[in-house]
Image (cartoon, rainbow, N blue to C red; front, side, top):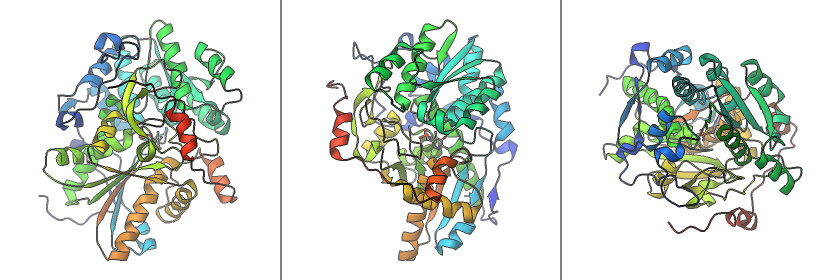
Length: 459
Ligand SMILES: *Cc1c(COP(=O)(O)O)cnc(C)c1O
């Protein structure tokens, strides 16, 4: 136990205190996440099955349920040093505004040009592609953070980067696109007419604003049909959670250094990578029976994979070119309503987090977008940082929990993940500021349409 030291507003670890390995939660899970399966044979995917899609080293990480720690290669550590450690910040000013006895801390991952935590995995994925001697990679991007992160990472290692960007974001966020192009990536709105699957989706859903699921199908098609290319994904996969464990390892080290013990850990959940990363060392302790924490995933009410989805095998993408994963899903045909402004548009969820949720190791709540933006506004006005709408889902629930502490007079310690900044989300903020933002909660009937697309496999 560390001595109680005066806790600074911002806790920065020193370079020598930075984690040098990623932590693999799966090693400590009694029930391992279900494997990805081949949609034709329904057999677990083997290394060779994934080789046409992913880089070799990343497949090994994807399949590795055994090693607790995986050393971070020096080249990746070098890049991490450019923008890490990220600070763990004591939200004094938010606490004061809420007049709560709770202690609130947030781990801020927005201090890099991509504006989010996604760079932590992008640099790892680009590194392994380079090491394998590839020419380039393809990917999808929704809100644009992942595409930006991968563009930066590819520029660093001299790789080509082809980004398929969900059409609604491509149109709403032209500046995101230009950041990616500045780093040398090519950016195509999805669904496009350049791929077979894009043409099919356009034909079946004329005027569609796209979805992550569509964009993934396009990027995979291009990767598997272009020599020297592989596909890289910014969330959901086991390997991505592994890379993002750097967030949690730093958070835990900062907590241990100052004797901070969280009662509640909160993160927003799109595909689950930041949350999976933030909680990993804490969840490890919980899985090994060494400590207990309340862990809360926060998702939008308009795309409620955990809280209203089904825990079944489903396709990871709309075009069904990807393998199937056992996860909480709304069905691969589910497309969130176009008025949904807050990112986190993915129909599925990380298989690791899905298993942990299913086994009762964590909770999930859904929140409506106007309440999310109200939380974002309060946070910006008190703590100064203009948060990403995605991150603001976590802020919302951190505030709600802090207010419960106020009602009950409890001095709990809350840590949440502030995954990024919202400078490119001004169309959404404008809607909120103009009072034109609405909440859309899909009806059970709406969800049934998505569920109908879930393949009937009995596994
Ligand atoms: C992508 C993104 C998310 C959601 O993705 P996860 O994989 O669930 O972490 C959250 N916040 C920001 C800022 C993002 O860019």
